[in-house]
Length: 99
Image 1 (cartoon, rainbow, N blue to C red):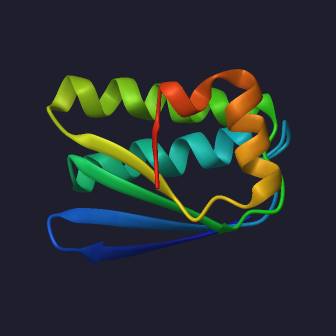
Image 2: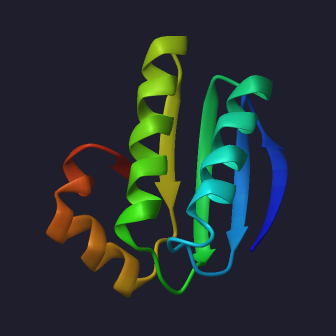
């Protein structure tokens, strides 16, 4: 798994590459939380994430709660169709802003 941070206006965009499953979910969660140290608004680009398990969803829920506590925002962009299905079946698309 690889992460790249890019400043986009007032937000920090986190470009994620690789599968997010039980073996990589903690690494993903840590990257999201570290991003909130640098900015209150985080954009998570999942364009290069071919798969996300429920372990990855937990990291997004924690990120969303962190954003709310800081008065910021968490947005997910460019989710692949397979990942979007996980969001829809889990109801995550009602919890996290997805563009």
